[in-house]
Length: 288
Image (cartoon, rainbow, N blue to C red; front, top):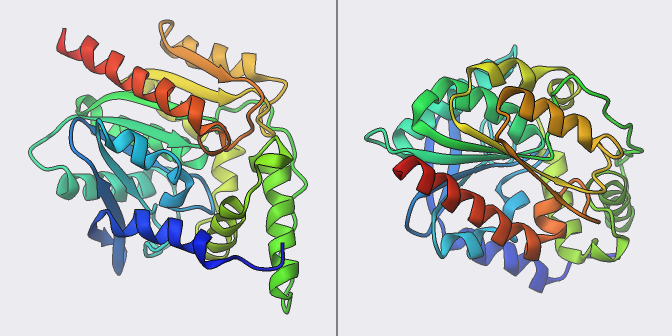
């Protein structure tokens, strides 16, 4: 791949343009939120060095039944970078403050966090308390467990467009997507747009026990979805399952076989109905 065509860019632009865009305070600037659909609120937190586009293949299907809210997390995507030091608790507080504007009147929500979004999401859920009906962890680390190393490369200064795209494709294969055939032009474009805008260094949160520290204070119903070939977790997915169920024995732990870390993109056709079913089940339990 030597360049990204207009058709690929148009996919992102069209989905983004269909959203209601809301800004909330973030440091000296704004945190950017996008909202689609109607129905029970589902808040999707993206991964490190990412943006709302980590959910690009999930937004339309989910918004047929739910109000889908996907922010750019502080210091990532289009959102401003808050003052340092950056802590999980401090970043989560910015998200919580924003949700008070995006979802007023104490409306309850289902929270899902992918990778770093799940690590941060644990602290969001803990701070929001009963407002969060359920919290779905998607391929997150921060559990104080073994995290497999990944062979990621940096784009060197002065790299040509073709060279940069080749590195982004390599990194997708090393970390995000298990099946090389699933690394399409859209995935490469999203990676090429997101990675350079990462101003909050998220890996240190994921490599520690950041999420597991928050889970004792999470009152929401807890569930997990992992790709069976998640490069950061395989072959230790059973440890993730035991950890989550150590806090809530009834937690669901679903594995989408063959998929990698970016499971909701690589296996969207399996992830979307599974996640929607979890949201409905937790909603019914809360109403019952």
